Amino acid sequence: MPHITSLRLSHFRSHSQTTIAADKRPVAIWGPNGAGKTNILEAISLLSPGRGLRRATSDELSRKPDAIGWRVRAEITAEADHQIVTGAEGDASRTVRIDDKATSQTALGRLLRVVWLVPVMDRLWLEGAAERRRFLDRMTLSFDPDHADTVLRYEKAMRERNRLLKDQVRDPAWYAALEQHMAEAALRMTAARQNTITRLSRAQDGATTAFPSATLTLTGPDDGPEDSSDLAARLAAHRSRDLSAGRSLIGPHRADMSAIYTAKGVAARACSTGEQKALLVSLVLANARALAAEDQGTPVLLLDEVAAHLDPTRRAALYAEIVDLGIQAWMTGTDASLFAEINNHALNLKVEDVNGISQITDH
Image (cartoon, rainbow, N blue to C red; front, side, top):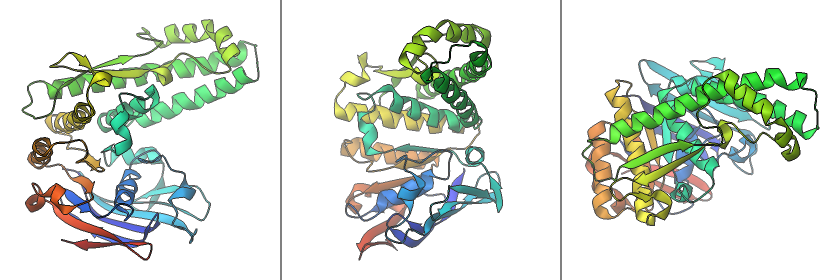
């Protein structure tokens, strides 16, 4: 199974110099609030495309008051052994190197699949669609590493079209090529998202688990374009309304994912806080099961404050499934007792704040 064997943080958030040696086992990280536990998970999230689990800017990641930049170095084992180094010097842009060769962030998705749950996601079913799209796209990336490139191509073309709309450009010749690029990428994005939902549904069906199954639906203002020409034509037809708004109003950037607690037939947004958390856990476990069933390994899971809103029975069930699937899950909590059921199967790390610097000890 793909996993991280070594992680080194340099001038990253609260970590001055931190090195963690790991293996295939789950990693339980515990300590008081503010000690730097989540910062470790955030560093790992940057081993995948995007801005990480907090969507922070590069400057925000640099340890203060040093402000000399930051670096995350990881040794990973997937189909082969690789080294990933990402970081930034001073106020420069973030760079990525794989096996000492400069590359793009999108290349990271082909080496390591990373999926996370953080406390802010506990309101995923209650907030706006943007967070649900990001959650779905993160899982989609685990199945289809090229999904990141597709999203970037779509967003680039959309930004250029939005600039024309904002400037009230009306010459159709300026829009045609951009709308065709958007339509082609949109079709691939929607197909990849729908394929992910199908795989997650299949992985939930018949699974022996303590977590509830979720019936997922992908919705949006442009449901079901038959081909790129169809969507391009719809974008052109929608141009006058988009001009009034100053932005593109249809496309997969407006899509949403809805969920129903299958056994109860209740929308996720109407479920209790504990049920909503359980549905999220169910989906990330289904993600791992689907990848394992397809012989693609499992994702590295980042579970921040995972015990929140899980009763002891479900907490134990989560740990049992993680161990059974062979997932390298990096989990945080405020007390070692929260990981009692998995202690014998995990690497246990205590994090403390020592004069403003995160310090880690094995337990």
